[in-house]
Image (cartoon, rainbow, N blue to C red; front, side):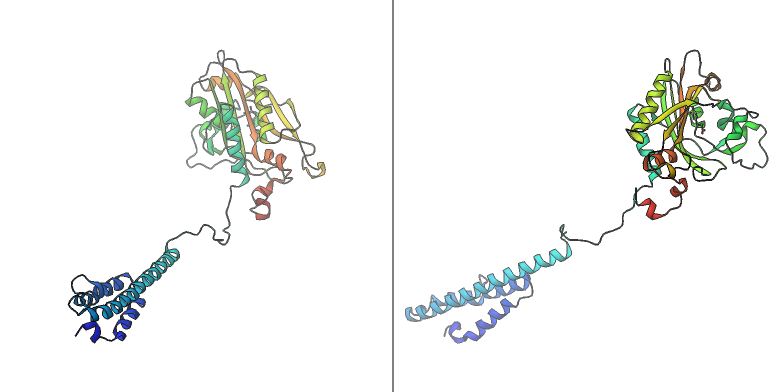
Length: 347
Ligand code: DAH
């Protein structure tokens, strides 16, 4: 008796169910081996036996077994496909990146407007061939005053309300006393001591003065500039000042040069810029001083060992907050430091 005949179809249907319910590809492969394995697969054996049967039986059983085989084959194909889809779905859940997915917005910060402005200063002056250097915020009196042609008794010291740093024991020489730098001009001295002319450099940074109102703060920012060569002139200086103001503040900026006194330059000039907003809002009126400049004094060059008979050039010092105030019509300097997000988010 053929096994196929002895096994009723419920057994095969049971296998069909096992196939359709297989948990994974491996379970499916095991059932396949059991049924269709080349040597001992149940269905393989049944089909082999057909060869020994009488032609009549072979015909009937052949049809039946092939029908069963087809059904089981179909079940394998169907289950394989289902399992493949399922694993692709779980891959999407675990691994894949959905670039169309809308995620909750994360708040992103940005630079405060002062460092951001300093970057654009470095970029604009970089294009004009200026190097960038920095110096310490705690300076000696030598660097902050003496080497800049401002001796101890000079009245110009009065205009820079200096924070002195107590020293214990006190410095032996007056020039070694420590102060918070009152301007970025010591940057000129440090650069000239360590470089050989010709050169162009700017030194941006913080400076400190005992001063506080709507247009003055005890800590504020400046950038110093210096250009020394064999024939650098006042006309070159004006060109650089005008380019800087137009590029950094506004191409339609209105400004004026007037003479000014600074011990480290001769002649000295100041540049004022016209307030661009409502004049009643400006705390200093129509014109705001934004830069001091001039031709470097021969004494300063001598102090750093540069021969004033061969080398000459100009220096300048811009007030950074003032430039930004003019650029955006910000009437009160204190807004920069209050940390009020309603102010900071506007820039
Ligand atoms: N250091 C000066 C100040 O803070 C500004 C200044 C004026 C800088 C003229 C310069 C200069 O380099 O040439 O008031």
